[in-house]
Length: 474
Picture 1 (cartoon, rainbow, N blue to C red):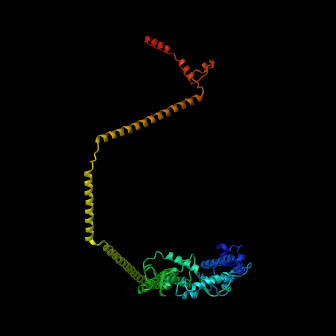
Picture 2 (picture 1 turned 90 degrees about the horizontal axis):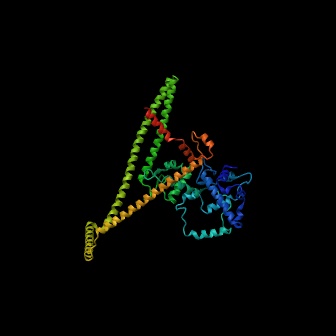
């Protein structure tokens, strides 16, 4: 399986293996017999070829593959799609002819030379377009079936890349950031707009034409390219050309300094190696070349510093221009608003009239208040109501405290009952000195009987008698 077909099978659902026999067959007769199947097959091939070209899998006659252009010179496309099982796609010519007829693909030279937008359609061409569409639906006057030759711009891919360009340049606000020479523009945007792919010079030429003519995003005179802002004119000015030349010169000097820096490092390494080898002539030659390179590097850095200073001044001047424009528009807006206000005298007059009317309102209110009964408040009634509210609040607090105490007492009683129940579950408890006596008696030993047995063994009277005898003996 070829690289192109393998990409389609892996990335496009329409090219799953079960669908390949239908896509590789001669389905041209389905245009009238099965229109839905014909449209589905044609749409699948269009979408697949567009995505393959954008991803860099379509064949190209240049070393750098085109991503916005489909190369149809010779039969390279058919060969790249050929398989041992299905052969070559038999209706591919019909698919490409239909894409060209519908405007989804356009010959490269026709696209570049068009003066008006490719999306513009004059009213005069609409009736014929409607008639042609109707004839194609019944199989008359449709596009040919032969494989077209040449290079064709894929408009779907062009829309994808133009959207990526708009996102990549959204943060470029100053005129210095938005102005490029043609070569600088190609170096800046050749990479990054398509994931892991690099746009060819032809791709970039097509993109610039599309963005300037059809999207009004760029302004160009062929040498200088500027990303337009909403308020700028489409013409390239002398200031734009000067900025573009300055940026390109700065980029060239930056590359030169990088090359000279690497050369200085290489010559230094060569001199050290010659010293280690005791080669005095080679070491001196390397050091001499190093000094010359360092001198050139120093000059390049000085020139680059001057150019960067000039670029900074240009950016500052451009910002000043924008600031002055904003101030002018703000002045005009303030002038218009002040004219609507009518000046300070008119404002004073309005305020005087306002104060006069407010004074009349207050005067009328005072007269009405004097005519009606005076509103009085009995202070004793207020105090009595306040004391009643306090008493009710205290009653509520006492009731809440009583309920809380009852709940606490109930909780303690429940705890006591629980502990007594646990003691009852423990069974008889032995009492020291009463083991033999317990054996002689038949009554059961419980916590209560145990306590009674202990009390029986105490002789209060005998203890008192012995104490008296001891006292008399003394």
